[in-house]
Length: 356
Image (cartoon, rainbow, N blue to C red; front, side):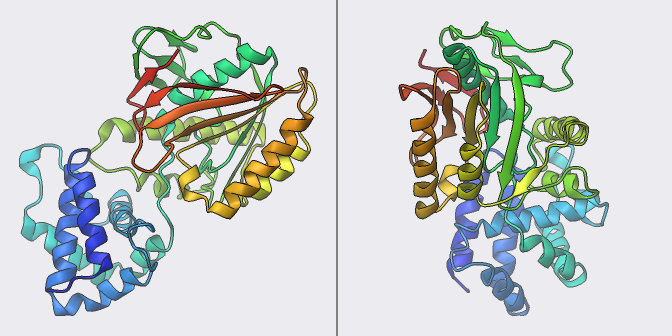
């Protein structure tokens, strides 16, 4: 049987998906066997392998799963009838998976290839639950209204995080009537800044490949990257998309297609006076190359040297310190350069372990 870096990437992704998304794990496992076992799929194997020399880093398996999910979301059979099953007992058989995979490759190849050309975009709005404590910290620390700058913003779902309602169990924040209600288990005492006033008056964002929710079809593309048996995430995403599209249109804000280092340098060079400028990002840093990371750090250092008490600067990061480490919520504020670790968080922010 054929074995290659692509096959190995599928194997590893299957293992990672088993617990959070059994349906996706089965889909990718049947795809792996289909690619590996049949001589007539060598063309499919070579097409997927050609996407990137490192198919694991390029998330080729997740691109494939997203491409098939996109077919289902468009109502194309057989995916629209088998994805996702409402009950475990209704899950497709191995033979049904195999037939559907082969049928998609032979009849929907242009659509699949177009989807495979794009990296996954998992704009997880639940990460707003980790960004909010950091923004409250900046507001309390500086006493200023905020100007937000977000890199790796995708569709911009987290750019309006102060407009949602948050239930952390031991404390809550936001408008009880907000359309999007986010729940997160807060482990530890409620933060001292929970009652801080938070006012965001400017927003800007960038992404290497942004999704424009004001354009038809873009919301569907973003939805395709959420695993289809995670009903709660899908419902949350659809609400966030609807609200964000409205705010983007009403306020004339757009996620710019731009390198993060260029965006940061330009925005910080023109930082507004009288506001606390906040550079923020969540689960983005590991996807930025070392040279670009250094350029961002240099731009932040230059802006930090110019920061004043009336026009401070903050850097809010919801990132793992290393690929195999838990996500940390870290915030540094200038002048002074004080940095705090507000806590650790689940990658999709199901919980936050406070370090208050």
